[in-house]
Image (cartoon, rainbow, N blue to C red):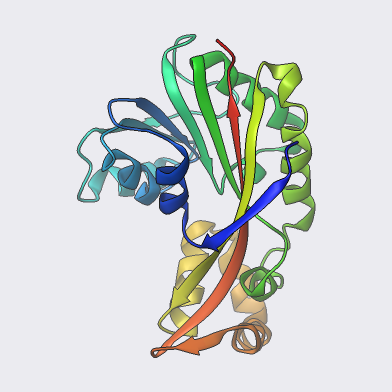
Length: 233
């Protein structure tokens, strides 16, 4: 892959604005969850399709305000519900590593299939480092799956995708309190509730040890990598 270049403290929305022209484009957000990032993409003038396997998350996404130019669909990354060469941009925002490792290459191949010639695939993935990762390690250690997601990207040329650029940024995650941190994590996956119930004191101590306080909030930093790929014309 191309060499990594370091950029400023930012968030995924900033980076997508920097890398992609979305106005008038058809965009797929794979693994959209409750659709916050999906709706942010739509504010850039895109027609956006949010795809997820979780019915409850899609129901919450559909009920949220600001859903203009957004369509939510039940579906899997390995079998996208779109015709060949019908999409301008496919985005994975913090979602590629959630796909079963044996299916990651198939999912990237699906992105290549639905992209138009010269279409772009943007993969935003958290790194297994930084204070947010350390605070989360006792809840769920994703070191292995994040490494496998990056390994899958190395196979992109065989799937019909060319690497354009790779960059890294640091995204601050802000929480009003430990309880807010816990609530957000439990909302991501039901199995995390049992982990918090069993190890709450230890997780809380780890959160407080890694977070810094700014303006009355607890801040954790998540180093993040972006890979931009292109489907040749």
